[in-house]
Length: 134
Image 1 (tube, rainbow, N blue to C red):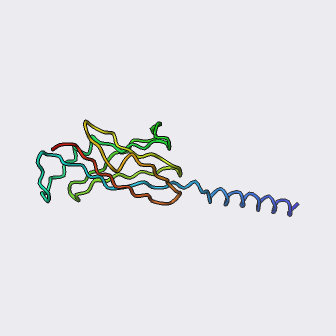
Image 2: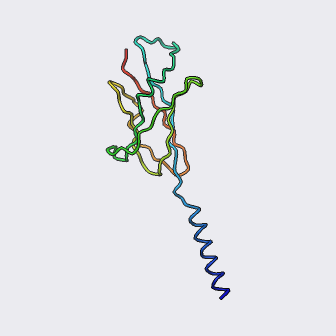
Image 3: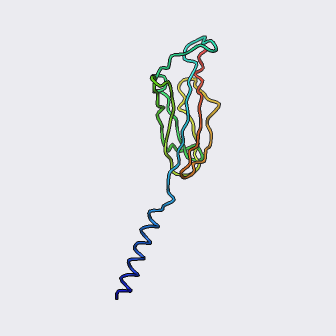
C-alpha cells in the first residue's frame, strides 16, 4: 500500500515537473524605427526634432507566414526625452511577415519581410520609413 502511494506521488511530481518545463516560450521581435523626411528640403546632417505624433500614426503590422492574415498590430514607442523610437512584441515561435501600415505614399525597403521567431530568442529588425516628402 505504501509502495502504491509512493509510486503515485512520484508520477504526479514527474508530471508536474514536465509541465513546468514547457518549450512554449515566446520569442521577441524588436527594432528601431526611423521615419523621414518630415519636412521638405531636409539637408543632410540637419538635426530634425523628434515628433512623436508622426510615429503615433504608423504601426508595425505582423501577419502570418503568407502575409494575408493580420496577427497583430504593434505601436511604435516614441520617447522624446531619450530620443528613441522603437517597437517590441512577444510572439509565439513561427514564421511571420512584418510590414508597415503605409500612410499616404510611405514606403520602406526593409519590409515586407519574413522573419522566423524562435523560442527565447530576440529577432532584431530595424525599419526605415520614407514619407516621400521631398
